Image (cartoon, rainbow, N blue to C red; front, side, top):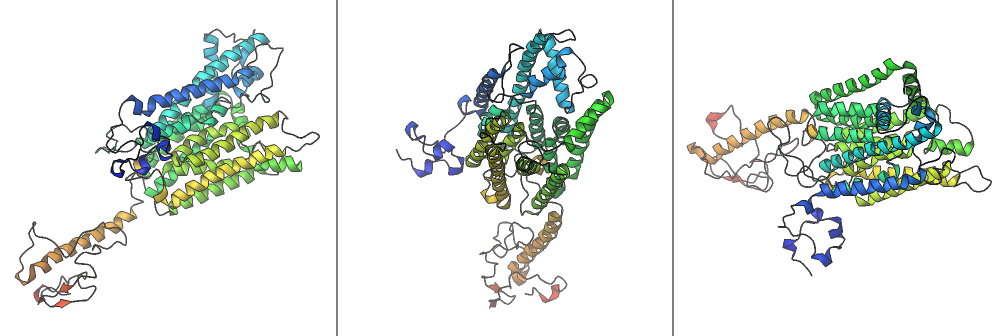
Length: 571
């Protein structure tokens, strides 16, 4: 059945299934005057249900790696179900109740160390034997309880990511105004783009590798607080996220760049002060408890050797030699990439969206880092959905990341090496494909920044749903400095037009009389105050004080001399 065009919903507002013609058997696309309200049209319950099903499948995928007998080990690489969480518990001595910092010396970030201590405490409360007298079998049983509690904590973090993306995705700011206090006057709308995260295969594969989902959840809530124009709260959350993963600092980098462009220095100051204070407090606690453990963790973060998943590893694996100064080379390349990104963000004709710059900063880091762990994709996926919600690019990066996830465990298990060969070409190809997928997605974001009219998020009057104080903000104070004198000049021209329209009688132009000589237009830098095509434009005829017409193109647009009132209006 063919529906009249006047009742069809605009193309950009139709769902992907409707644009593909998959809804033809159920009545066609939704009409323009339909009222999509109610639980069925609310993405929140369906997104939570989808995330719950994906997480249950992820837990079920990890069951082959659960070890029940201490004498019978399992191969997590062959079964693609490796996780750091139970392995660290069994191998570090956590099951014997020693302190994580002074006793064991866990070399983890402050936030992750606190999560491990909390999870172990809950393990002891629910019946796990945690103490110096625990036997190896009791430690193994307690590690399974510890892993189950960690799965619940990570599921809560996953739901937090889903909710944050739903409240910041495409279309979330439609119909939301700003009060006199600078706060949104209504809750944000819920975006259907959340399903790109809730049903992401990357979350399904890498969500249970370690505690990375908790810092990612804090990053998303920091972006949500910033979008709701609460910079102090956003800074506190990003400080906690940086205490869990330094990759969260790349989102703070995006905030700094765009606030400098928009000269939002007050909000930026509150954001940075709270972020630095919280981050310093977290590291200070660890430093006071165990300075040696803190220094080892800090040293390993910045000066460790070449890791898996990078170009540097391909060079190391193919040549058999370690790349000298790989840490410094990687750091210089990362800094150069971020500086280039900052320059591009400051020089584009229209200010980029916050999620675009944040996603590109993460991609720059992942391309130049000296190590790439499979769980690094957990921060990339929600940022990709906010930056460029395009199903083709999302499919590309999902496939390449999934292939790499499978290849890295097969590489560690020795399953991808040909017989008698020491070079894992299959793993090298997976690394190149992973880098290519990230470059592909990053290039799409750069194209949206360079040509904002093709940005699928900026539809209608939408500027930046995640921008907060940057949303619809002018690009600096220089624009206002240029607009104000031009507005004053336009007002003078309108006053003169009234005087010219009154003729020699000097009668003023009343409010009900037409002003057909000058029309006020949107004034900006380099924009004329006379609308093209109006009677006062260059194609119109102007009359002098004697009523003689003249065909000079600029007769109607010239300024009248204010210092010669006695001679009458002049051209």
